[in-house]
Length: 134
Image 1 (tube, rainbow, N blue to C red):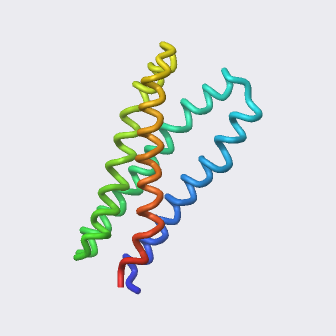
Image 2 (cartoon, rainbow, N blue to C red):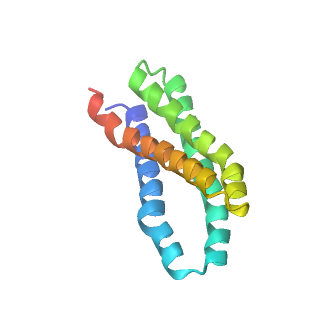
């Protein structure tokens, strides 16, 4: 295994850990133990930061692929997807917040569902890509 491959696996591990922590630990605790106005403040503060961290890791992956002259479409796709999908989620945050504030439940559900799907795609590709590299 080369150094870049190990770095890419570690970065994917960070991504997996961040997403699992948020979905399996932080979000359930927030919604179970905080009042609605408190959880709202927390969620609106945390999600943009999570998406920013994920897209920054995607940028690092892209940079490493070019720096180490990686000639593997899977690694390039993972880096680009890990950058692009959290960026889209980050850009959707204001619209999602506005839908919540205006009590537009239908629009909120659509935006939230899209955000969850994009985040799950990032999670899944970062879990499976090492199994497809020889």
